[in-house]
Length: 561
Image 1 (cartoon, rainbow, N blue to C red):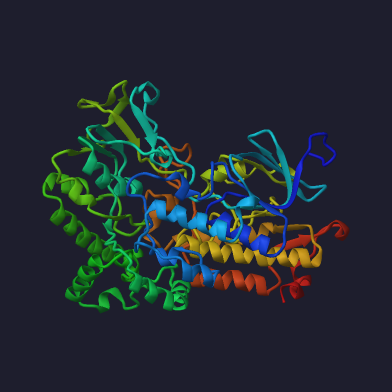
Image 2: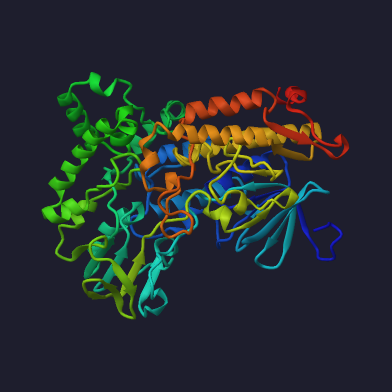
């Protein structure tokens, strides 16, 4: 679209898509620099995943004090996290506090879904068509899209026939749901279901859980944060964030550097017993590195966790159904739980293994399996997300030369550093596919990505450039590197969103690996992207209208000084 179009177009230097954790921080950085920037958000308000996911039990699995932003000492000193793993209402309250404290809300527009975005080469600008009929244009489009923000419903016949209440956990009614005296079905036993099932079990008259594939889970071991504990946390924030920066996962938890077989088996078991009792991801991320790469080591930790499930679930048949048989512990992100396994000891909870008795259809009154008919008052779909690329695929994004992002990524994402895409100039993804965010403590990765993108834009503006784009060679090299890093990881065999698996999304079924995440860890990722910056943004081409083309990277090295 030309700027001469009769329709009035709202122009900005930067449009940020998404008002979640990423979009909020990216907007703060832009406004701090005096840049004309705006956030557009399809929901009614800010918060991203913490605005939409309001199901009972929804909370951090990162330590709260490692999840919050680190950029403001004042913010760190004034915010009191109430629990080690903060619940959704508190998380949303925190993000609203950040937006209000830094006066970000006036620069956000809500109920603004981007239907179509296209790059106009003659102007080096993006044009965004919004669902309310308006058009925006910007020099730079920054994607603050959530990695788990495109929910998927199961491919089950008859969903539209059901007469009771039914919803995906992502769309949990904001007014809440009264479960008392109700017969409730939950379809799915992934990370969300593992949080919600114990909460629903306490309220519902009956709860029937339909499981296709079991998932491993470990205790959250949450606790309240006292005033004294919060003071102690504040006193060592620098130490905490330094530890996160040095750990592969962006958490305080660091892997055990001893060789798995260098440690006596009895000592390994004693260590696992201790880690199982500790809060958070310790049992996953403070473990031996070989559990992620070696079948025998993984089998041993898997059997340890399986023994814990058998201890906690009274019925041996149910316990065995809850123990995964198709993947080992830790090869995909481990859900953390609070009395999840104990929920199956309740008289009002029943587990249905749909690999044995498949769901045939949803009926007017409930669910029909191959074995029986169930009547329900409420059906909850805890069926996950079209992860990582889903939010991009559901937006029509057209780059130069008629490149369509959805088509370019049809077999999996191709990026440079997870933050840029060849053929899509002036589009930045601080937390994009194959970046350092997807497989790490998300906000730590977000701050790294936002800071790197902001530094790049500062060079662009200081030098008077109007276009920035990754080269095809740099993109191919990075995408190949990401794929190669899967070769040593057991996760390559798992049916998880780390490998792009989702049976409810066409083309994402089993048998095709999509290389979604960077497996090198935070320190290596940061070393790599900082080296790119220090070499004058190697692999990135900058241009301006007067340059009649491109400025080779070696000519802009001084711009990074």
